[in-house]
Image (cartoon, rainbow, N blue to C red; front, side, top):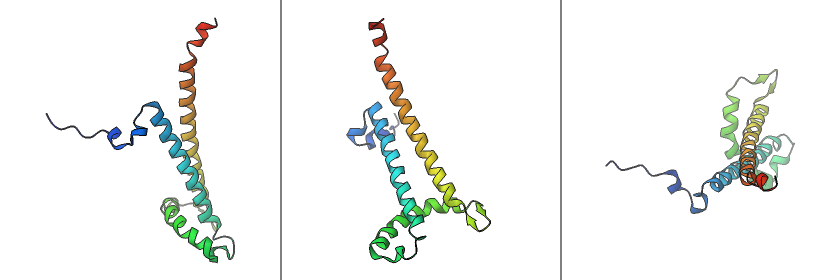
Length: 129
Protein backbone atom coordinates (compact mmCIF):
# COMPACT_ATOMS: atom_id res chain seq x y z
CA UNK A 1 0.00 0.00 0.00
CA UNK A 2 1.18 3.47 -0.85
CA UNK A 3 1.42 5.87 2.10
CA UNK A 4 -1.49 8.29 2.29
CA UNK A 5 -0.79 12.03 2.40
CA UNK A 6 -1.55 13.65 5.76
CA UNK A 7 -5.04 15.05 6.11
CA UNK A 8 -5.63 18.75 6.64
CA UNK A 9 -7.31 18.08 9.98
CA UNK A 10 -4.01 16.71 11.29
CA UNK A 11 -2.43 20.13 10.72
CA UNK A 12 -5.19 22.02 12.51
CA UNK A 13 -5.14 22.60 16.26
CA UNK A 14 -7.43 20.24 18.24
CA UNK A 15 -9.96 23.02 18.87
CA UNK A 16 -10.53 23.37 15.12
CA UNK A 17 -10.78 19.66 14.24
CA UNK A 18 -14.52 19.35 14.97
CA UNK A 19 -16.91 19.52 11.99
CA UNK A 20 -19.42 22.39 11.94
CA UNK A 21 -17.79 24.38 14.72
CA UNK A 22 -14.40 24.31 13.00
CA UNK A 23 -15.80 25.77 9.80
CA UNK A 24 -17.66 28.44 11.75
CA UNK A 25 -14.47 29.33 13.63
CA UNK A 26 -12.49 29.55 10.40
CA UNK A 27 -15.14 31.78 8.81
CA UNK A 28 -15.14 34.03 11.88
CA UNK A 29 -11.34 34.19 11.90
CA UNK A 30 -11.24 35.06 8.19
CA UNK A 31 -13.91 37.73 8.65
CA UNK A 32 -12.10 39.34 11.58
CA UNK A 33 -8.78 39.17 9.72
CA UNK A 34 -10.31 41.02 6.76
CA UNK A 35 -11.76 43.60 9.14
CA UNK A 36 -8.35 44.25 10.71
CA UNK A 37 -6.74 44.35 7.26
CA UNK A 38 -9.31 46.96 6.21
CA UNK A 39 -8.27 49.13 9.17
CA UNK A 40 -4.63 48.71 8.17
CA UNK A 41 -5.51 49.68 4.60
CA UNK A 42 -7.32 52.77 5.89
CA UNK A 43 -4.27 53.80 7.87
CA UNK A 44 -1.80 53.17 5.05
CA UNK A 45 -3.83 55.33 2.67
CA UNK A 46 -5.13 58.12 4.91
CA UNK A 47 -2.12 58.86 7.14
CA UNK A 48 0.20 59.99 4.30
CA UNK A 49 -2.56 62.30 3.01
CA UNK A 50 -2.76 64.34 6.24
CA UNK A 51 0.09 66.88 6.18
CA UNK A 52 2.71 66.35 8.88
CA UNK A 53 0.99 63.33 10.43
CA UNK A 54 3.37 60.80 8.85
CA UNK A 55 6.34 62.69 10.35
CA UNK A 56 5.26 62.09 13.97
CA UNK A 57 7.36 59.32 15.53
CA UNK A 58 4.50 57.21 17.00
CA UNK A 59 2.57 57.40 13.73
CA UNK A 60 5.66 56.53 11.69
CA UNK A 61 6.35 53.55 13.97
CA UNK A 62 2.85 52.28 13.29
CA UNK A 63 2.88 53.11 9.58
CA UNK A 64 5.99 51.07 8.70
CA UNK A 65 4.55 47.61 9.54
CA UNK A 66 1.12 48.60 8.21
CA UNK A 67 2.67 49.60 4.90
CA UNK A 68 4.63 46.35 4.73
CA UNK A 69 1.41 44.39 5.19
CA UNK A 70 -0.80 46.34 2.81
CA UNK A 71 1.65 47.16 0.00
CA UNK A 72 1.47 43.75 -1.77
CA UNK A 73 -2.34 43.93 -1.84
CA UNK A 74 -2.35 47.50 -3.15
CA UNK A 75 0.31 46.65 -5.74
CA UNK A 76 -2.03 44.02 -7.20
CA UNK A 77 -4.64 46.70 -7.81
CA UNK A 78 -2.13 49.30 -9.05
CA UNK A 79 -1.21 47.01 -11.96
CA UNK A 80 -4.70 47.45 -13.38
CA UNK A 81 -5.38 50.48 -15.62
CA UNK A 82 -7.50 52.34 -13.05
CA UNK A 83 -6.25 55.87 -13.55
CA UNK A 84 -8.95 58.36 -14.47
CA UNK A 85 -7.58 61.77 -15.28
CA UNK A 86 -5.07 62.47 -12.53
CA UNK A 87 -6.76 60.22 -10.00
CA UNK A 88 -5.63 56.73 -9.04
CA UNK A 89 -8.79 54.65 -8.55
CA UNK A 90 -6.85 51.54 -7.52
CA UNK A 91 -7.42 52.44 -3.85
CA UNK A 92 -11.15 52.48 -4.40
CA UNK A 93 -11.04 49.14 -6.20
CA UNK A 94 -8.93 47.68 -3.38
CA UNK A 95 -11.51 48.75 -0.80
CA UNK A 96 -14.39 47.37 -2.84
CA UNK A 97 -12.57 44.08 -3.40
CA UNK A 98 -11.95 43.70 0.32
CA UNK A 99 -15.51 44.71 1.15
CA UNK A 100 -16.98 42.17 -1.28
CA UNK A 101 -14.78 39.38 0.10
CA UNK A 102 -15.79 40.18 3.67
CA UNK A 103 -19.47 40.44 2.76
CA UNK A 104 -19.37 37.04 1.04
CA UNK A 105 -17.71 35.49 4.08
CA UNK A 106 -20.37 36.92 6.37
CA UNK A 107 -23.15 35.74 4.05
CA UNK A 108 -21.72 32.23 4.10
CA UNK A 109 -21.46 32.32 7.88
CA UNK A 110 -25.06 33.47 8.32
CA UNK A 111 -26.39 30.94 5.80
CA UNK A 112 -24.70 28.20 7.80
CA UNK A 113 -26.20 29.53 11.03
CA UNK A 114 -29.69 29.67 9.53
CA UNK A 115 -29.38 26.13 8.15
CA UNK A 116 -28.21 24.87 11.56
CA UNK A 117 -31.11 26.64 13.29
CA UNK A 118 -33.62 25.13 10.86
CA UNK A 119 -32.19 21.65 11.39
CA UNK A 120 -32.44 22.06 15.15
CA UNK A 121 -36.00 23.38 15.08
CA UNK A 122 -37.33 21.08 12.35
CA UNK A 123 -38.72 18.58 14.87
CA UNK A 124 -40.37 21.26 16.99
CA UNK A 125 -43.12 21.93 14.45
CA UNK A 126 -44.33 18.35 14.92
CA UNK A 127 -44.59 18.85 18.67
CA UNK A 128 -46.79 21.94 18.41
CA UNK A 129 -48.99 20.82 15.50
